[in-house]
Length: 418
Image (cartoon, rainbow, N blue to C red):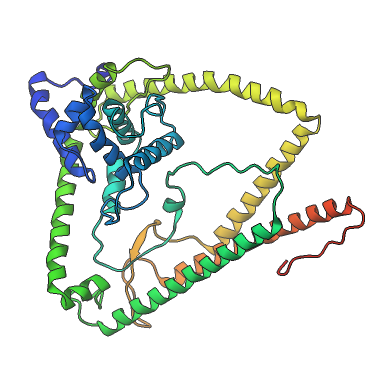
């Protein structure tokens, strides 16, 4: 695999590889020592616990600096296996590792390299641990909803379902939802008081007031020293990430030697890291490799699709018509939602966290989002979701009426709120 990329002079690689591994270790949250990576290449058992913890920090949904106690090594291993399987990790040897965290350092190193190669892992981790000086608000939760995670448990619908249990779960969900809304309203009210009381105290006139963090610094000077240490730690990780980007090419060539030392599997992972210094020849090689991977995937998918269609085609002659009707209904719903969203107007800025700044009535705001625009967009989205909910409720009523009509002697009483 090393022949696919630009070759590095062996004399330069001898010094660049330790520097690249050191930078990667400093940039990752809770990164192990560089010696751990070297030992993992030879599958040394003493390197496995540190790599299990590292993958747990990388794949866990909670922040890496969470003060809560870490779960047991068995729980960490189960979460790592589950998340990697849900993300499509191809090597089966990782699933077969024992969950006591004592073995599999080489496989764990391959899994970490696969995560680094398939997406901006470092950027995402650095964004999670970023020190926030201002009071921020996420405009959209798309990133949270689309974040990888363990697969949802499968629920069998063939058994008997207790309606009372479902109603109890729905009531519990509504109660927690109202508590969440209430807590967010209280949080916004407290932020408004802080912004109002500290108006005119900020050195930046475009802001006009202090944030909660800045106000806390005035109250507790010791907190300022802690914040300074956090900022210094964040800067050190950013510098390490930049150093890693400059030297990562030699790391991927080293990972090719690690992969060659592994026992062969039916499906070998192919590392395709993002190389910043791209040349015409390298792009051509990557394009040919992607084309080969696409052809291989098509060769595997087509027989499975044919077998699946042959199996489900035995359900009856009306299956094709039902499938086409379902696809058409889904297409119409998506088109209606898209048109309603376009009429309501989307957000003018990219989705993400934005700092909350209190502005006086009638004054021109600076760059950013206006609260009225965000509220308007959210209300438009709420109207679209309510329309879809009413449509689904109508379909459920029709289906219930059809089922009850097939049972003579039953009286259908709608539950409250329908």
